[in-house]
Image (cartoon, rainbow, N blue to C red):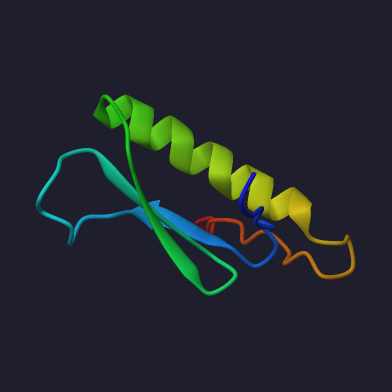
Length: 74
């Protein structure tokens, strides 16, 4: 193991501006950026959801942002 990264305050999302490969997601953690390639679009969605869920539970309860609920019509 060369180095391990914490997912606290990490960001993850679709690497839509990276055009050399398809199905790429971008993960930013501890000042580093990683481009990861999945086999399919569904794989990208699943991985991004997993990274975001892991980022949400990596923070202490006091530091976690409150979820934003969608606005409901009156």
